[in-house]
Length: 494
Ligand SMILES: *[C@@H]1O[C@H](CO)[C@@H](O)[C@H](O)[C@H]1NC(C)=O
Ligand SMILES: *[C@@H]1O[C@H](CO)[C@@H](O)[C@H](O)[C@H]1NC(C)=O
Ligand SMILES: *[C@@H]1O[C@H](CO)[C@@H](O)[C@H](O)[C@H]1NC(C)=O
Ligand SMILES: *[C@@H]1O[C@H](CO)[C@@H](O)[C@H](O)[C@H]1NC(C)=O
Ligand SMILES: *[C@@H]1O[C@H](CO)[C@@H](O)[C@H](O)[C@H]1NC(C)=O
Image 1 (tube, rainbow, N blue to C red):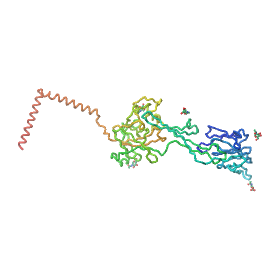
Image 2 (tube, helix red, strand yellow):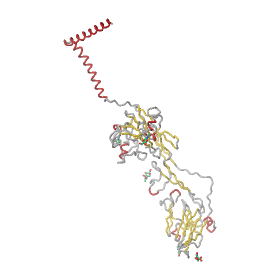
Image 3 (cartoon, rainbow, N blue to C red):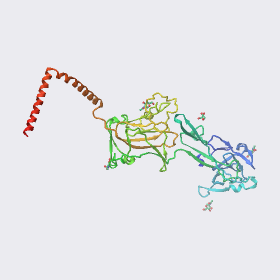
């Protein structure tokens, strides 16, 4: 039955009639009443044999072999039936059905004498009219619409001071009783914080008279979960095109770029050569400009229904789409003040063996600032790969100019019930191209030439003092003198 998607369970047999409003957790017998008094606490004592029943959201009709019709209401708190006046309505094939609130049809099949078929005799019962009969001693419905009552739901925010960095987290717990349908809900009945949940809430008037046919219990479905209108966007204040570093026309024209093999994760691609990547301009537009020499992290914005909401301060992770590894993180597990071993892309990949897929999100994220006996902090020197949140972690690029395409996923389970993720591109510039000659060689050359000149400065004066040195010196000064003469002659002639 539809109300609250939870239905009413009715269990019946010839001399037993039980009802449950919560899928069988609590099952109660239906009482037989007369004039506001309980005649029998259950059908069993009433010495009747049930032939057939019919029910809707809040009404119940029972036809017995003793040729009696019973009628009752299915309230959340009380369930009872009363006996209507005797009438010739029972037959072996008789059936009941509600056609509307307070409208009951009793159908009796009649064999057609001329065809091998059945006709139906239909007896329509207007319950409200019958209940007016003073013989039944049914009290008038006294439920009045007075001042509307508002119904509050208790939603508690717990302020939780995280000792690290004076950060305050808010926990939300909603006290709504959940149905234990099919064992899929929490054993503790309260909504879970990490997983989206749904609850139903049913409102009924307590102890109302059986004549209150039109005062049905009202049900509503409450869903605690992701608001699908939310999405995240990475701020792009300066694009590489507006600064004239990349040409938007060239980018749109099937632009592709090369990732040298030393700059991508070797486990990421089977081919171990430089990678040629086509730039998806349609999806990503012009890349955001980032200077290589400055630590950087993306500024993530939350948007809802096309409107900016806030800058996201929650924890998130990024990963280069083509496995580029030309960057590191400014913090390590130790300097991020982790108390347990932080997760990283390697461990998150291993947990899904065989398939190299990005799988790090709010459901499998475990903060390293929470004590975790399964993963004590063993290697404080590993990279801390989580950005945002309480730490000042940033990305440090290696000396390489080029395009990076990043996948970004918000992992903080308390930020949103949605799996917020996005893809964006940046262009890292300002890195000088790496020298062709290795720096060690340059240093070697420099040191060698210095040593050589020192050695020459020492040996040349010593050499000139020797006999051979003196002869060479004379030869050079003669040559010099000859030169001077030649010049003078030349000048005199002109
Ligand atoms: C139950 O009903 C039968 C016939 O309908 C009757 O003979 C019997 O006496 C009744 N028993 C009680 C306890 O009322
Ligand atoms: C059966 O058919 C006969 C003759 O065609 C007709 O007179 C009679 O009324 C029919 N009976 C019923 C129950 O329809
Ligand atoms: C229900 O919650 C209480 C307190 O939060 C906890 O001690 C208990 O183990 C929980 N029961 C189950 C079945 O999860
Ligand atoms: C881009 O490449 C596709 C196929 O790879 C081709 O069909 C298309 O014409 C190219 N566009 C331009 C502008 O070169
Ligand atoms: C990821 O974490 C594991 C331990 O949890 C560590 O052994 C490994 O070196 C880390 N990887 C990187 C790239 O930091």
